[in-house]
Length: 171
Image (tube, rainbow, N blue to C red; front, side):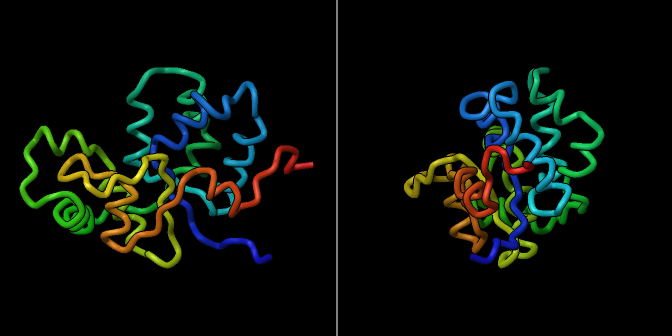
């Protein structure tokens, strides 16, 4: 089986939920070293806007890990934002006339999706949001916005399978 060559772009919820629920760093340290390894190899990245969103939250083991120079240097996507692409995602993926509260609610998701759309064949958004096609405006979910705009999207478990994560991967 040929290994997947996509670049996986992480939503904040993938790391927050992975650390807080499924794979705490103290219980499954192999996942966190694997994530760093995959980011060093250019397979997993996180846009700076999403990285900063996590750091703006509470100080904990996850934010401590993200602040490590080696993690930040390798995990953060080294690309500048395209404002017109973010506007395209916002207007066409959510609504043309979002008010300030609605824009605050969707947060930085349009940035994440716009980076994926810059190379839709080679990039995939990774999010733990669950599709809800009936949702409107600011309540639309990342997988639905991705689908409507032509960006690939998967959950963290699909990414881990595609990139062949296993405990003991580095042995």
